[in-house]
Length: 462
Image (cartoon, rainbow, N blue to C red; front, side, top):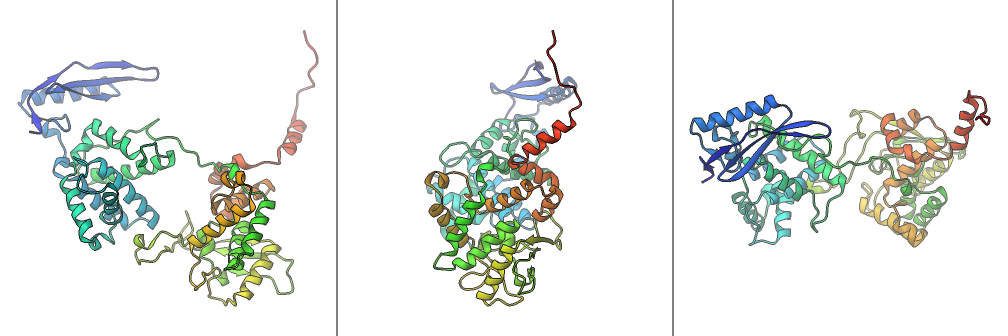
């Protein structure tokens, strides 16, 4: 039985903390204590009165939620696995490929935490793969092979109902489980924050469809770990080291010159890697052929991130979309120095590129592959940096090239509004990310502050 009539209700307990006072209603079902905290005594009194009235009417209480049966939402009639599949499908239509992958991973981890019993008949890795790659993937679910379908049917039979979200103890248990990595160690704060964001969206979806009454996830200070968006200045690459790495890439026997042009474009104009990969020849405005010492201009209007063919609508590895955080047709033009003018002119000539062609192509044409660029960058770093530098955050990701360029612009005194436009960021976001990386301006700032000092020089006083 999931219900009981063995109910005992206690008086309200008052807790006076340093910052606030809370009022807890306490009751017991079959000897197991339950409690519900409230911010005011009036709310606590109202809730306690509902419990007392339920016992007076002879109502049964749920052992899963601790509440009277009539107080329950429709959660007990809905299986978590079925709900998670429905939520994944709803999200699929409105999110990008990378967001779809994140949603699937979070739902996979949550579903495993919601199982009644561990999957003894299946390997844990097979269960995770079945959930992540098929159950919560709208496009592939119907393609699940027989062994995967068997696992998913077992999961559906052995998953708790949505009523588990009305049990505060179970909610805490689930949050602890999804906040850990496979080895049992705590996940990174950024990962925990992404997980909580997906779960909040799922719970709000359940409330909207009247499956749950309220959102049981903790809110306020301490609900999620703090994360910092600031760029780690240790990840920045000094121009001299960058020059050596680029030269090493250019000397690669296979595709070195193509990759050199790609990485140089990121370094000199600061786009996101997926924006540089989406460029076409027409997006580069070069000065006349006899003006190698003049600046060029590059136009960014599209991004093609690599998300994997299983997560795009058309089965392609890359997903084509507009610039991040901008309207669909927005563009931005960024000046390229004479050094980039020469590099891009040589690249277009050597590759025999025509207007309408992709600017940076793979060996067999088409968009340049992320696996190729990452391998080339990793190899060049290893060969040009010391062992200690290679193991450090310095340039560990291709994205750090962009960070280095934006920081250099700011350090060169270019107004933040202009840098923000070239970077495709807002000014507040730009400064929040890069304020800790700005350097080299302190002597000038000190001179300015001294010039503005209006107090007379202090002399010895008694």
